[in-house]
Amino acid sequence: KAGVTQTPRYLIKTRGQQVTLSCSPISGHRSVSWYQQTPGQGLQFLFEYFSETQRNKGNFPGRFSGRQFSNSRSEMNVSTLELGDSALYLCASSLVSRGGETQYFGPGTRLLVL
Amino acid sequence: AQSVTQLGSHVSVSEGALVLLRCNYSSSVPPYLFWYVQYPNQGLQLLLKYTSAATLVKGINGFEAEFKKSETSFHLTKPSAHMSDAAEYFCAVSDNAYGGSQGNLIFGKGTKLSVKP
Image (cartoon, chains in turn red, cyan):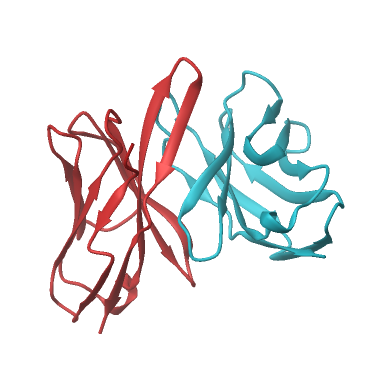
C-alpha cells in the first residue's frame, strides 16, 4: 500500500507570492492533518480535515488555508508569503480501526521563501 | 491554555541502557497526550497516544509512557536502548482528540536522543 505522498518535495518562492502544497493520504484514510516545522518555532499544528470538512485549526493567520477533496486528497495554500513561512510542511493521514488509531506522515514539502 | 515542556533538548545514553525522556504538560481539561519520533532526514511517526483508557501506554519499538496526573507528566521510557533509537522525540498535548482526530496539538520543543555504542 502506498504511503502518504506530498508534492512538491521542494519549493522556492519569493515574498508576496502564494503557494499550494498537495497531500495524498493513504488509501482509505479520511483524515488529513497539516503541520509546520521550523528551527525557531518547532512543530506546529496547522489544521485537520475529515470528509472534506475542517475539523480542527491551529493558531495561524488567515493567509494559511486548506481544503480536502472528495477523494480525501488535501491541499494547503499560503498567500502573501513571508520569509518566516520558510519551513518543512508535513502532512499526515489517519485511520481509526478496531485495533486503534494509526497516523502516518508524509516526507514533507520543504518551502524556502526568499 | 495548554503547553508542553520537554526537559532536556539532548539526551545521550549507552546502547542497552534505559531511555527516559521527560515531558510535563499543562492543561485546563483532561488532556490527550502523544509522543512522536522523527528519525534523521525522515518524516514524523506516532509512537503512542494516551486517551484516558489506561495510564500506562505501550507504543511501537518497545517504547511506553505513563500518564501521572499528580505530576502532570507523561515521560517516555524504553528499557534498553538500540542504536536505531537515535532520533528526535516530540511530546504533544491536545484537548480535543476524539474519533480518530489528534485535535489541536501543541508540541514540545523536542529532545534529541543519541545512543552511544
